[in-house]
Image 1 (tube, rainbow, N blue to C red):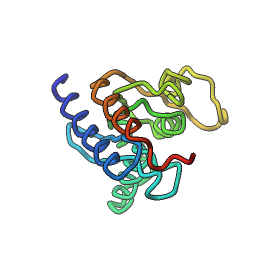
Image 2 (cartoon, rainbow, N blue to C red; image 1 turned 90 degrees about the vertical axis):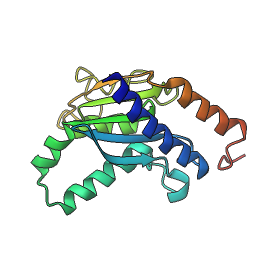
Image 3 (cartoon, one colour; image 1 turned 30 degrees about the vertical axis):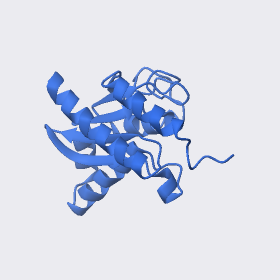
Length: 172
C-alpha cells in the first residue's frame, strides 16, 4: 500500500508542477476510488480569477460533473465519495477541508503542512468528526482519516521554487 500511496502522490506532484507552469501556486491533487484514478485537480485561481478554484475543488467539481452525466442519484454520489481517497501536495485549507468533510470523503493524504490556512490540524481540525460544528448544527460533518507528510520535501521544494522566482500574480 505504501508504494501505491507514493505513486498516487507522484500524480498529485505532477498536477502541482502543471499548476506552477501555469503561474499558479503549485498545488495538485488526485482522487482515487477502488485503486483507480478518477479525478485530477490543480490550482486554477489565477487562470479562472476565482479564489475558490483550489486543486481539491477542481477535482471535486470534475467528479460531480462526471457523476451527474452518468445519472447518479444524490445517495449514489454520497456513497461514491465515502469510498474515495484524495492525495494532495499541501494540507487542505479550511475551505477545502470543510468541503471534503461535508462530502464525506473517506481519507486524505497530503504532502506538506499549511501553516497559514490548514484545515487538517495546522489551524483547524475539520477532518475530525469530533470538532465542533462551525457553520451550523444542521450541516453534517462526517470527518475523514487524514495523514500528512507524504512526499513533503517534494511539495516544499515546489513551493520554494515558485516563491523564489517571485509570485508573478502577487500584487505589490
